Length: 150
Image (tube, rainbow, N blue to C red; front, side, top):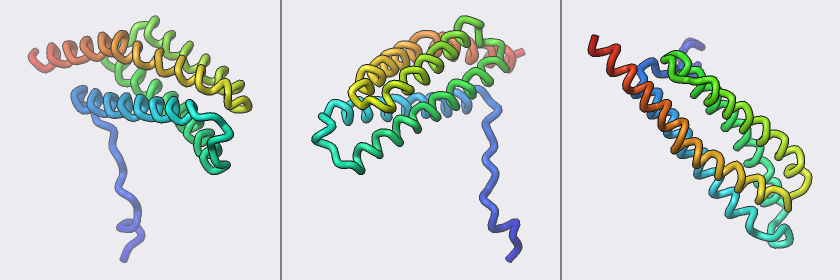
């Protein structure tokens, strides 16, 4: 058996907007679900949690930040390619990522600071997804439909 057959298949990012949008929406869904789960878990008192649960919460908060940064970068890339990423939208992403990172610096050490941090992030994400993202995605779909019909 050759080593080439043992290598995992390469994942190719979609090129068509309808596929990109579907992937971005799945990422939105995963981020919202993780945020909701973390908010629920952080509603419990620290004394009610095992050491394993506390480590898991911290790990999942790190994961949330990583997924959020990756999602924002990919979204900016694809919307930018279609001319649908305005400077305000991009600036909003940068501000949210910076606030999330700064908030985590405090919340990482103080579990009691995590719930407000998570809830603020959840509120921003929910509003952003249904506001600026929805408008930019609609513009991208319109742009795509216009260019394919020409």
